[in-house]
Amino acid sequence: PTLKSFVFEFLKRELDNFLHRNPEVAQALQARIIQSEKERKDLAGIKKLARERAKKASLHNRKLRDCRLHLTDTKKDRNEETTLFITEGDSASGSITKARDVATQAVFSLKGKPLNSFGLTKKVVYENEEFNLLQAALNIEDGLDTLRYNKVVIATDADVDGMHIRLLLITFFLQFFPDLVKRGHLYVLQTPLFRVRNKKETRYCYDEGEKQSALADLGARAEITRFKGLGEISPDEFSHFIGEDIRLDPVVIGKEQSLQEMLGFFMGKNTPNRQKFIIENLRVEKDELTEA
Image 1 (cartoon, rainbow, N blue to C red):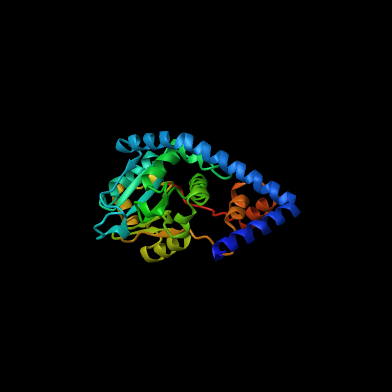
Image 2 (cartoon, rainbow, N blue to C red; image 1 turned 60 degrees about the vertical axis):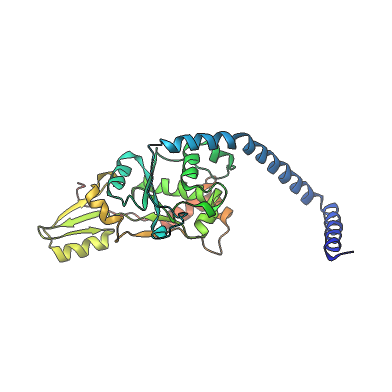
């Protein structure tokens, strides 16, 4: 017998013996196979319709403002600069759209908070219109080889709702497109919390420390503006934050972390351990300034 047939027969015999000795493992495998078959049939039934819907929507989708260049272009002058900003609401996307580099920066506007996709099957990517359009915009249904943007940037307000949207989007990508994160394509946009200015100079500050430093340099009588959200920032100002001085936080998965365990801890059912983690890591910032 050939080596291939020998290995095949050996594995077949040993696996058969193992499953007979361990019926609980055999039952678990059988259940998983049946579930996978059901999921494949469910997906097959809606994929075609979802693709057609996404293709039609992409031609006149007001939620997507595309750029001229893409990561997959054969001419690779600025491919690495290609970026898709995922924003919340029309006001924030409006400022970014007006301030962006139309050659390399695209904008996808969310309607609001996306669905919590933890524990759901990939069927939801096709059934949920927003997820389906986002998948189509990125062109990653069949893998990352056709990814249209080098950077996928989550751009939300730095408040509780904005942080929740970040978490929901990160969960979506980790759940269904983990390689996008593992290969370093997913980022979170840092935006300033304060503007400090006097008659001669303007500083944008991303935290309390930078604000205090700006006050020390510009004088205690400098005007301080507290940005409530991205929609308040004018396009002229936004061009500073998404241009050469852009600040991006990469989304990184620790090697020691199990992806499903991590998602289960943060996005699964409420647990005492998660409550304890939140309490121990809670940080409260007191803003004594009047918001502008």
